[in-house]
Image (tube, rainbow, N blue to C red; front, side, top):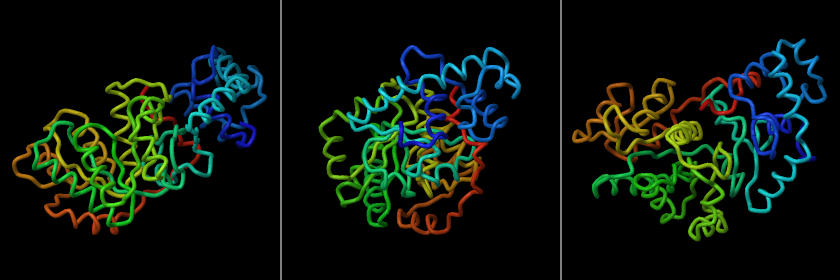
Length: 315
């Protein structure tokens, strides 16, 4: 904790919820309000409850904020224990935080990430691949082909490490000597204990990250948050297979399309979900090689201000 900036420390204290027996961490709206009032959360360190009420906080929130900011010692011990397990905690104020994630997601970007693996790899904009867990051999082949092609582009694949399209495409990348950024919706701590994952990390073939506590369990909410970050870390994201108007793949792609992000849709007439996403504005492709053209044409979105940054809004 000592090597962190005061801004980074403040984010950890206010949002992580890692300190044992401390107050409840701030919710997104509460954190946004604080950032709107103070600009930089580091300015809150050392402030009294009275100081915070003068800023405009209600007394109950002012008490909670001061309580959270008093947890520095116990939080440092938890962060150190995670570091010993190979898990780093990166906030929006730390140099390794991927700048393109803020650029793409704006105020919906997470203010902190838990990371296992190469921070240099995490900082590289990649090409995302998403899709259903249950796919037939034809779509499985498309996923593997996409992963292999992304490896040939010399950029990391970004996916969710889940059964189905995610792992098929990631394995396609690994088989061609490429690298992967895996965004998790469940326990990072448990995932990195798996033998194959440990080998990927040791060989620097992958980095695993999550905006959720390393001991978190899978929920529909964490899956939706995971999908948002996959799009945020990618210059363009390919949807291999989506159900129609249901499921996480559909919802994530629909939101990304509405957010003016580059979303390529595998143009398969036999997949109503894919056709529906194309009608919403997704970019239809029938040749994996077209990913390179979309990637090179992608333009960044205006980068948000610090006041706009917030932990992923799932609460």
